[in-house]
Length: 327
Image 1 (cartoon, rainbow, N blue to C red):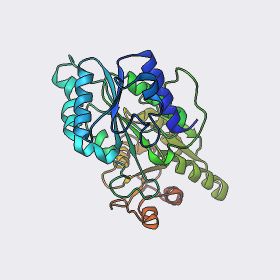
Image 2: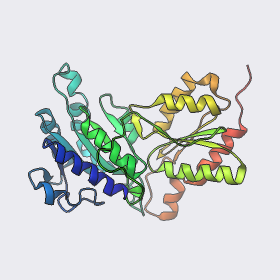
Image 3: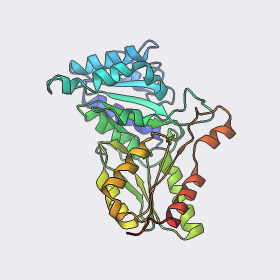
Image 4: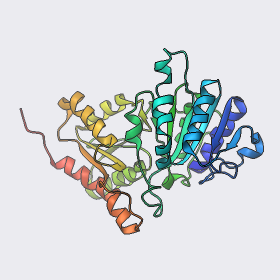
């Protein structure tokens, strides 16, 4: 089953179990940009699969209002950059409502958006803006890397009583893999160790996990280095215990993501590792991320801005050759 089909499966099961679950967004009645809503209109009809006008602010306003009155909406923003037109509804309404109402009102909605690069989608359709949302108190953020986690995390996101940002990287929507049937859930705030190792820890999420897996294989085959690969899956809440266990074992860390390096999620994670795990570190934390430029349309330039497998391998080799000063 593909990543996209797994999310259709998760949504269909949730809608069958709970009639409060509705889906709203642009052009979703015919299946959505990547087929992630295909077939849902036929089973659940236009009262629950709702095509909306081309206005992200309107979609989020309707979703927040529906959630506050007892429904459990799933709002499609198509591409992640489109959320910029609905930031007031996301940041000032959805994220803060539980706090501002003294816990009397929750906003149980899921915001789904496609991020990342895919075949020259260019500057307005290729962004990785997860650090914007992890910065906002009141929001939860997940970014699965494979079909099984795509289904399990979406099911948990739809169960949650607070707003969850669900990021689905375009480049892995068609990737296939085994998916448990039926009631499969992955808890929010649980990372996975995708590959065990003892020499260096590679921390990744979303599509970068696939490049991390390739990098770990290269490090093993060409350099005899055993890299441990962590797939965070959930950026907030963060499973820091899994990070602690790995760093205490390897003492060397590479954090890799597709987003811009400057101010990216890796900067926050690196700072926390430095503050809390300094005694375990043998070398400075190394980060891998995109150059600080809009994502180019040109394929060669796109490849030059967004890091690939080679960049992770190079970063791991640097981490293994560096040493913190003694004393």
